[in-house]
Image 1 (spheres, rainbow, N blue to C red):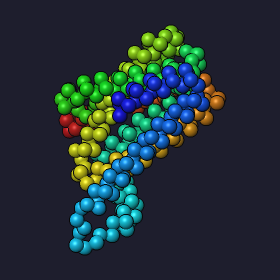
Image 2: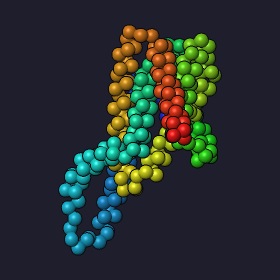
Image 3: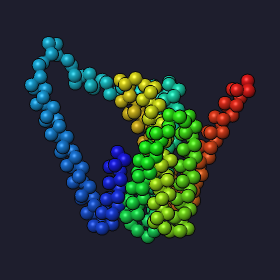
Length: 275
């Protein structure tokens, strides 16, 4: 996923500026078509395999079961999200993270274009740096993460992510430097990685394997609700407020959410030990 992000964003950003948006869309649609076409070969291969397999003694109503299972699985997945305390916590974290991403994404693209006076090249390269930071953060956190408190790690990472957004925004506004923007974008990805890795690990440890697909699908719905809602809100605010201040507000709000959560957790521990 991270590798495809690095390749896709870097090539896509440069390509769109080189050959234009219209031609880029033609190339993009061709790639999607080839991707869909490849699935036809997979389906054809599976059908041939099923023909060669022995039929069960009692026919199974597969189609009927699949039709019923979608809404059943969706209902069971969403129910588990809010009934299990650890999964509920992860759901809130993913909702907050992707709400921030949605609010920042739609404004940051135009902010970068206006600040560095480019169309898509710098947007693609900065996105590539974020994914590179994700790789580094995931690798390093994977080595030391087991020794750290997961809840504190998530909230401290949220705080540092908010600070990184502000560093990127202020630094790029003042310096207009691609090098500074690249380093601060990589730093942003580095601090996002522990949030995603820790939250995903909690799900894997808390939920039995047969429910994981339903849980991840349900969390995906919650994530996208946050992403789309705050993207819409941010784009509407951008019509009346300078994009610089919207990004600063997003970074500051996310940082405040992280540090307040750390302090609340610390006070709870103090009260527990003192009592």
